[in-house]
Amino acid sequence: MSPNPRQLDYELRSVRLPIENLGQCAACHSEKTATSTLRLCSSCLQCAYCSLDCQKSDWPNHKGACKLTDCIELSTFYPLLACLASSAHVHSDKPMNPAINHTILNSPNPGPSSSFSSSIAPGNLIMLGPEIPMTEWGSPKWWPTALSPKVRSKLFRRLSSEGYNLQNLTAVCVALLAEMYTTTARVGERRRILRYRSSPIADFGIVRGAVEVQPQDTFSYMHLSDDGTPPRSWNGPDPKDHYWLYFRTTRGEEVTLDFAMYYYNFCYMVDSEPYQEPCSPPLSFVSAFFCDRPLDRNAPSLYTEKGRISVLRNTVLHDAVAHTLHGLRPANSNAIIEFMEGFSGKRSSAIERDLTLKWLMVNFQQLESALRRQSWKRYPAQPPVGIEGDPGELDLSRMDNDDEWLQFFRRWKKQHKKSKPTKEDVAEAFKAWRSERKL
Image 1 (cartoon, helix red, strand yellow):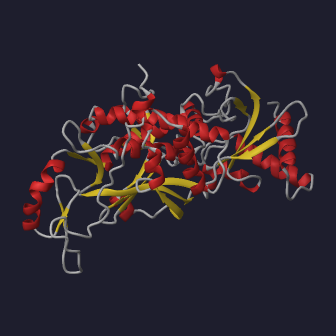
Image 2 (cartoon, one colour):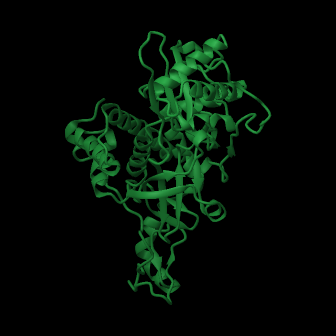
Image 3 (cartoon, rainbow, N blue to C red):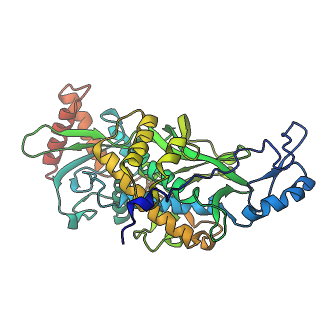
């Protein structure tokens, strides 16, 4: 039975924020100084005390909420968030990357030669031919010159993960706010919060900036037509306009989480099997680059931050999720889209708005299921992670079609006196090369 609209007005969700910092004792209200240290309650991580005596004196007031609070470790929980992000890319309404349903005419294989196109277009140029039926997507007919089936499969998955990064992160973060941070500690219910090691997560949100990747690990595209129409070209996602998540603890420590690096051939992966909910789409390995304390201390940063925005402490989003217990109202939807647009500085397209809200509804369902079933208690203490490499990418002795095409194009530019070739010149030269080789 559908819920009564009158009832929905009273079924509001209220965001309950975790402690933001260790600034004041919960019992005597003395403030932290240079010589004093406040310590968190080790059970719920939601009250700080200046002494054991203060903690004991406050126990009658604190024990009710303390015993009904679950502190979920972020380093074991983040793979579930990665599953949410990956499920977005298999959503039926996500637009198809044209490189998926058109034949690939050149050889964008991994290795040094794949960067040859940087002088013509940003990144590794993929030249597309005729459209092919769904039954041949990812097949040898889709990309005949792949070094191996594994290389072909990986490119297919990279291309499938392209795009809509900000929309994806917004849908993940708002769902986390609505499903976890509206829980409450009272009889018959339990409050859930995230922690990292011994500190609660005090804030989380989205970061905008640049990520350092190799030119050959980005893509640009050119569609060649046989009907005489000019070639159509476009670029893939720009690593200088990138988004990722941050999580900050009450002690000021920060960890980051990025779901979009697989497209850039930075393939930190998590086995999704332990994190599947009954309502989850079937997934195998999902992309997740979790930069935590050990990695942050021992590896150079790939990121340059340009701006950030909080989700957990954003009062506009608090109001937006208040009525999401049974779905999204138009006013809530608009507030979420305006939050995203305000941060990016760009107006969302109709498809971007539609995908954000549809992914959000899917994430509501999956996170609600995980929290209701207490699935995190069964998650591995150490997530099953790995790095997927490129088969044959270190075989520098191998000469593939791209090397031949590069040599031909250099000769063609010299012959036709094209020191700065246009996309039309590239298309003409590529057709001449294919004709010469009878491809």
